[in-house]
Image 1 (cartoon, rainbow, N blue to C red):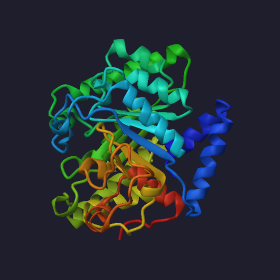
Image 2 (image 1 turned 180 degrees about the horizontal axis):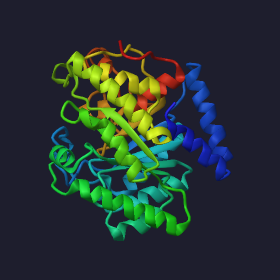
Image 3 (image 1 turned 45 degrees about the horizontal axis):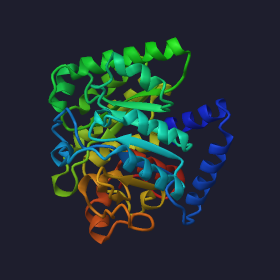
Length: 346
């Protein structure tokens, strides 16, 4: 199980959120037993706009304006009605949405645990105080290298590495001034053939920057275009990830089983067919279309109109064969490993 999941349970206990825990535990047990349940958690993309032009992402090219606050609140109402207990807000860069803090407030008012993914660029000093006061449970910043040259090249924005360091310092200081433990602050590294040699140094950086969590996610280029490591490089990456585990210690977000499979995945291994995402998750794009998972939303495969009844349709044969087998997305595969519905990639 991811350490962030255990941290959520611990914080809910500390804050006396027993109702949330009971409902989340019930839905998790139902998923473990294979019973038909609605989504346990949701991802809401509030915009595809982004101020970065990352070498591995084309979402900004698809941006068609931001959904209004009323539409986003309606989407929150729907995922709550479906049974979701948590929501992750993402983009694009979600902090570009002018009413993001209102979205967070609406989610909290509906009893949802709220997580935010960001590139960190918009968390200026003026934005830190309202973010800390918003009730956000956790915040993950994307950092794709242990040195500025690597990260800035992949993100195509000079100075973005330094910006994240400054942002984290401001967030830690603001949180300490409030005497608060939330939001939980984390760094996530998308491991690619261009940066994999820096995973241990990334762990050292996470310790030095005093974040609460540090995690790894293999970069996905699906099907034939998927980037692959050679077998010797994959073996060396496995060694360096074990070193990163020792360095990061309790900060490491990934489970050992998940992390052990990352090098094999990047070398071309595939996963078994079974995936819990269609039963436990829903991803909602800025246009309101609903997908079983973030990868399918990113690829615009298998979506349903916002007003279509019922949950998102499960992946069709093409998606299962070409996409789902080539997926080691942390949100879903970590849950699969927890629920014992899937083995590590072969």
